[in-house]
Length: 450
Image (cartoon, rainbow, N blue to C red; front, side, top):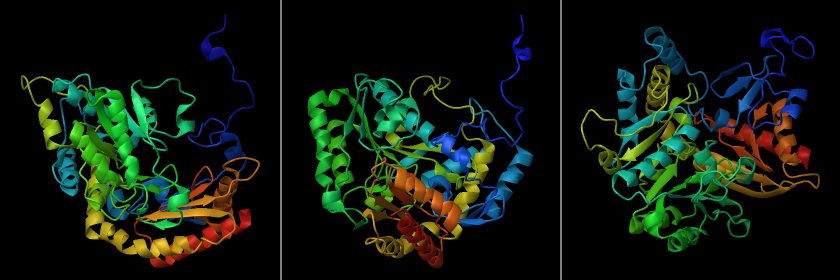
């Protein structure tokens, strides 16, 4: 009988650079491997293909490289940290930079959002926030508060908690019943009322009142938390309507429900402020972050909690664990070093303020595409834009997928797609000339796929 080691693999001998072994995430693998979009290196505002062709980054990598690529101070900090301390356990031990970074992040957050729990991604951050919310009510003697409220079209990562409260159908439909006891607010977008809006739409604040209906249906005593993105990015850039987040805050306050802002995309300057909570003047109870905290250089995420939430856990004997949760790589030394160097760049180069100053120019450049063939809507907020294209009869997403391919191969531009929406969110170091270049290239692509 043959052992496992003696069973040969079928097919030809694989080469080290063979494309077949890697199962790409959120990617049509067969189409990609027929015409791969490969990246070899990056610097500042550009990626470079293996052949050396420059590709202008219109997406900050994956909404994350806010300070640009391969910035020298971040690279140097990672290198130095790797030489000094490669890893330290996060359970029962710690290293100095974890405390330093937590203090720096807390200082950027508004009000009493000043306790930071580290993890490694936005998905982990969301699941961490949901667990903290459930545990918070439990330790306060309100263990019946187990219901979680998300929103249609929301994206909160790919953990079972995140896809349960998320509202993008393809992220949910293959994975069974998910978490029980989850309900959803309606999406905040209406093309009829909001088309071609710069910034926060005037219409839509009343949609927050659906939370009161959900409270009436389930009773407040069963609801732990509401989680929303201040700007829903992955679904196609849907800014919160004016007054919407304020109404959610008021309803949550009235019924003792925690409000969670998922700021994995909006955190660290995307909307012109350290956090969107500051832009909107609404203080949530928990904030999730990731992506921009290290400018995408090393995986890192986290949750910022308000002081009273942290204090609720600090009971009982001092030697007992207060929260039974964490990750092997929480506050990884390399990630902390990268985070500190990144925050220095944001501060020293005034990148949050720069994004705020560039927002009107960025919005005007995006809206200049309004009359191109097949453009149904354009939305902008901060340094972010969503452009809806008309779908083709052969399927939703086909036109935008071709546009992404053409942008990369023909125009030297990286864009993101969701369905038939093109999403743009360049690094915050983008110049005025590069903003013009991005939208000129997008215009060429839109005409080509019309």
